[in-house]
Image (cartoon, rainbow, N blue to C red; front, top):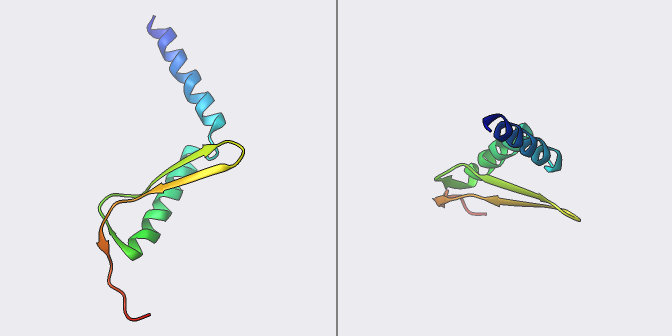
Length: 75
């Protein structure tokens, strides 16, 4: 029974990977880049999280939490 469960997990991971718009490594790099950019403007309380959904279009949702915006000079 355990072998069947392991095979099902591997099959599900393969299907999710094939349907994902980005490989997991690319998604991690994207999250790190977005955290760095957003961190220049906000005091982040957690790293940025990215959700990517594929349909007719690719929908990218970025979620980040910050305690406050960083101060800027006069624009």
